[in-house]
Amino acid sequence: MFVANCLRAENGLIVFVPPPYGHDYFKTVSEKDVLVSVADYGIEVRIKDIVIPAPEFMMDYLAENRTITVYLADPSQYMWGPEFTAELSKDAIVEARGAYKHMRKVTTADAAGDGP
Picture 1: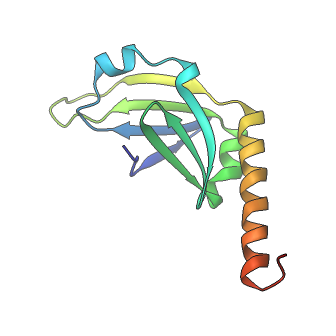
Picture 2: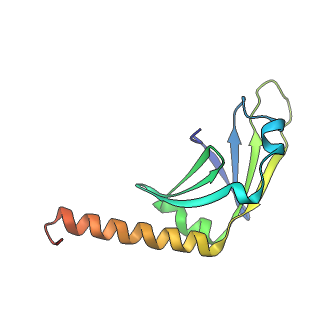
């Protein structure tokens, strides 16, 4: 599932996921299920099969504000509470950001005919 919206919070991001993700789903999630990887648009954070995109304009913010809090966006509930919170590894974010910038540089050079 690709997250469509998030909120910038003081120490990271608040992410909303819709049903069918529910309380039972998040009971089985641990911090080892959280991965940071490179994407065509920037980096992404994966929590099992939930993908949280972090486009290029968000990468520096996320490197300094690394808490991801997931809320179940259930329209049948009046009040939503946090289901899962993870502190991302700064090293993982910096590494993915560096890989993305390198990939973009190589792609730009290849498009300009400067590549090998």
